[in-house]
Image (tube, rainbow, N blue to C red):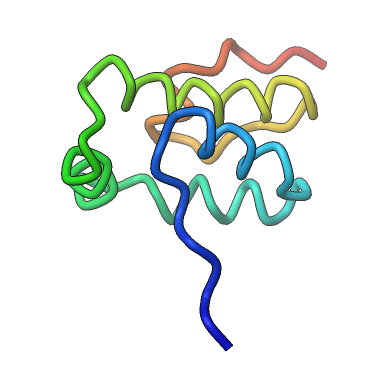
Length: 84
C-alpha cells in the first residue's frame, strides 16, 4: 500500500488541515512546529508568504473549532487569543 501524497501547496495544506478532527489537528500542530517543517515547505518551493499562509490556515482551523493551539507554537502566534 502506497502512502498518500503529502500536501505541497497552500490550498492542499489548508484542505488537509480542514479534514483533521480536533485531537489530530492539535497533534499535527505540535508535530509541524519545527524549523524542519519550514525547510520542507521551502524545498517544496513555497515562499515566505506561502509558508505563513500554511500556518495561518492551520490557525484558522483552531479558530473555527474554538480550540486552543499548542502554546508557544507558530500556530499560537497567528491565532487570536482564545475567548470563552
